[in-house]
Length: 153
Image 1 (cartoon, rainbow, N blue to C red):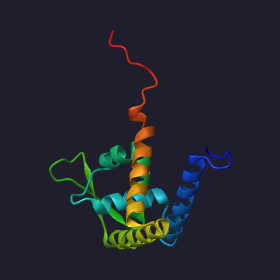
Image 2 (tube, rainbow, N blue to C red):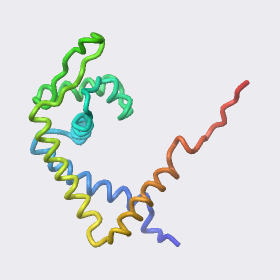
Image 3 (spheres, helix red, strand yellow):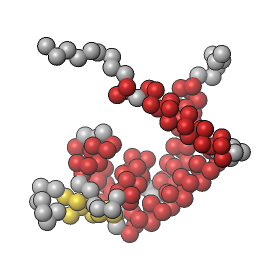
């Protein structure tokens, strides 16, 4: 039975807050927000430079939000937007050396934080923990639950 003082959601929120603070502190020295850090991480993981529309889709963000995030990252020298020679309607987002350096540092911060997160866990417990997290996410995924039946009339 679950104690009234310890709900899963509260514990998950506390874990998120704790890990997010570590990442935010690391980003502060670069003058960036967590959202900007997430975008840079995504850009660094791509082989081909994406378009802003790709970021909108992946992060479920509006066009104005993505435009603002990219404008600030470009102004700070982390990325550069260039026209796509094959499609002039699309600007491609290129990570500049400063953005690559930040990505490497953030990757180390994330790796260190995750190592602390599972400190004292055996390899088997780490695998179980990952499995539990993935299953919990799947259980509450909005796509799995349909609150309103669609009619085909």
